[in-house]
Image (cartoon, rainbow, N blue to C red; front, side, top):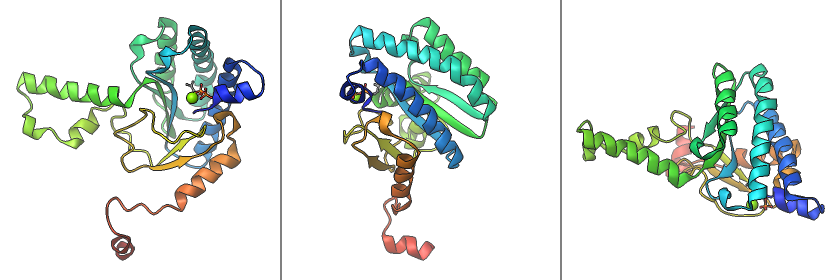
Length: 230
Ligand code: IPE
Ligand code: MG
């Protein structure tokens, strides 16, 4: 969800106003994709590198997390949407970590859609923590190095049983992954737009979905093989 700061700057507003608008757009995105029948939506809200931003901005983001989690959890539960947090929660202020756990807890039973919020998340961190668990099993003697497979690494990722994304939308005119779901994105269709996240609306989400629908997903096969399969 990139471009909050630049959007605000263009409007001569503080960066925090951009983040606030970003939360509104995130809410709209959840609503839009839920209606479209999407089962899993992951939002990259805060990367493990974002702690390096000015203290004032980090603290404004923490306040936003706190208020958004408090406000939205009830609505999500009402719409049968489960909220999950991806990332290392131990670094968040205790109040924020507690609000995250509470929101996860109060929507745990919901099964229409899962919204995964990547917060203090990094793709490298995710792979590292999965591999570390396997190394522990090897040390205990319950796993042989030769039995380490991509399936085992994948199962240990914070996304666990969540299927790999079909589509990634990156806003803000950057054409990179920026340490998002680096393992999980191996076969994902990538959609880039120069629009800032606060400019995204139902129409633009629709454009992204149309882009996805026009892709032919071959997973390494040839076009002919796929046509034979019908
Ligand atoms: C998004 O926008 C997201 C967060 C990290 C919260 P940015 O803050 O990166 O906005 P730009 O890139 O400075 O415009
Ligand atoms: Mg940015």
